[in-house]
Amino acid sequence: MMTLMDAGDAYLQYLIVEKGDSSKTKESYKEDLSEFFELVKDKKVNDLSEKDLECFISYLSKKGLKNTSIIRKATTVRGFYSYLNLNGYINVSLIGFRLPKAEKRLPDVLTYDEIEKIIKAVDTYDIDGIRDRCIIECLYGSGLRVSEMTHLRIENVNLDSLFFRIFGKGKKERIVPIDKEERNWIIKYLDEFKKICGHRPKIYLFEKIDGSVLERQHVNNLLLNLKAKTGITKNITPHMLRHSFATHLLENGAPLREVQELLGHSNIKTTQIYTNLSSKTIVDKYDEIMEENDKVSK
Image (tube, rainbow, N blue to C red; front, side, top):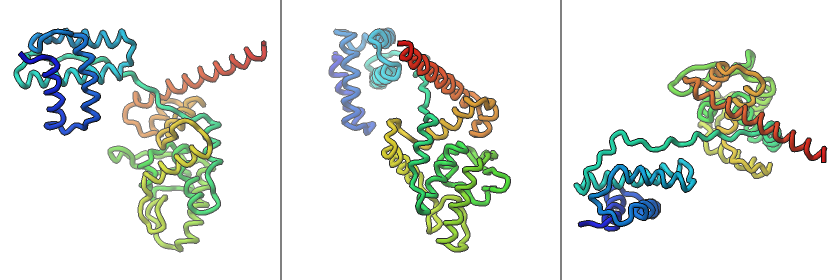
């Protein structure tokens, strides 16, 4: 009769040969299986049951592991069970077996002070710097997705009426306002662009001198450089600026439905996460104030 260790080794070899998983993945799975084997101890392979997997999840939970870790380890063992079923070693149906739900993590947002630091850190002495300032303004000032911004056609920029016509996910169209500061920088950027490129037709708002689309990687690199210049410890991403835009709107009393429309969310439940972020920011601010009051009273 095949031992658990032999079955585990066969499964890990299967993952590499048949599935093409890396040796690093194999080591991770090996650790998960070893922990499971330690729990079921001297059980024979054909004695494994759904109850053993349930006990493993309960054991991991009692150890205080986060749901993400529990799910990963339990998924490894579930895959092991599937392999054993496939090869006729066991007959355990896991249809309907549910793993724990992953915790919903709130996305990070930037504070008003951090936004101000990022804006001030952009060097606007040349056309590249002016363009980069416009990029920050569009990501935070209008809450655009980075792909929406890089593919924003000049014909969909209305600087007189102060709005962008955006075609988001699923080509869904929406109108997004442009604030006056954003407008001023866009005008300055277009003026500088015209000085360098003459009257060459401009297709996209943000494009290279040769007319090609500005890559997403340029925006990522820009934010990495600004993170280093400002000393901000958060992992600044284009989407974080979008998150910050939505959160700050709600903090200032914007209705949830309006924020949904501005972001282009098809489901309001996606937008509701920002109400949690907004509440968390308020609580954090309250805690800061109370700490300061405690210091003063002492």
